[in-house]
Amino acid sequence: MSELERLQVVVGEVQAARQQVATVRNQVAELEGTIAAVEAQPEGLALHRHLGGVLIEVGDRATLIEDLKASHARLQEHLQRLTEHEARLIEAYETMRKDLEGSA
Image (tube, rainbow, N blue to C red; front, side):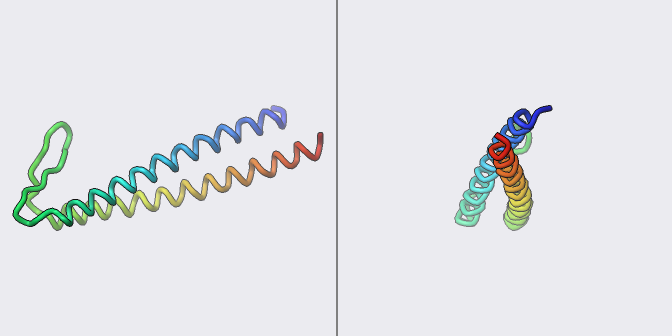
């Protein structure tokens, strides 16, 4: 595989990583909104959780909030790993690009 072909592969990987980062960022933001909405919901009003194809009334609000916060923490960790991976790919791209420019 030529240097140019390898560079094109890395470009594709960078684009895929950026798309994954954007997707997970959106999921994190959506979950943050959900947590805020659940915490703001008055105690007297019912909360429902979507499980499979069914909406189920939540009996334990505190457990729901704990579950949502745990999911949020896992997504944040995943986002951090993806962001680090994206940065490494960009660094590899920049190195390859400079090498190609230097050999041209």
